[in-house]
Length: 240
Image (cartoon, rainbow, N blue to C red; front, side, top):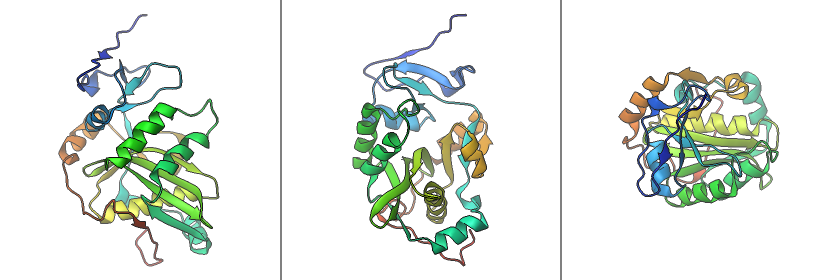
């Protein structure tokens, strides 16, 4: 059966309403357009993101339900806390965003990554404009894990993570949740649920609720320190 999928206008940055996305494949909303900053920022402010493979048309998505973390409720396991206390990892924020984006792409098998060269360039540009942020995990001055995503007011839209050493991406997520919550962050969007996210404690939120919450939070002003380049620290006395 043929399906109708809207094509985006090459000039303006309007999108179809998220609730018009297809159920199968889940969340497919539109195709076309480009990855210039104005369009990407407009998309994330509406709960929409690009996801496509090399050689495919540019596809835009808004799945239902949405995979999310509540940063104040993230609970690392006792074993993860113990591992990090004994490790020699250093965790930083916004020290090497361009590198993190590239590593999220290159550490995956070619058939598994959606982070094309075009996507790498687009998100690196978003970082330079202050929208894209990263968490880095270092071991002896080498990047061994991290994550990156887009800030939309009180919401952080996670894009990808990688790990080249034990628990590196888990620790990046844990310390970022702690930091984000402490500076007024309300929700971390993980887009689509998978087994790995579920194992870390991600939950699901209906698209209509997520969209309403996004509209409430997208103009929120967080602490100036929230995305300031710094080291993220851990204390055994912290709540999580």
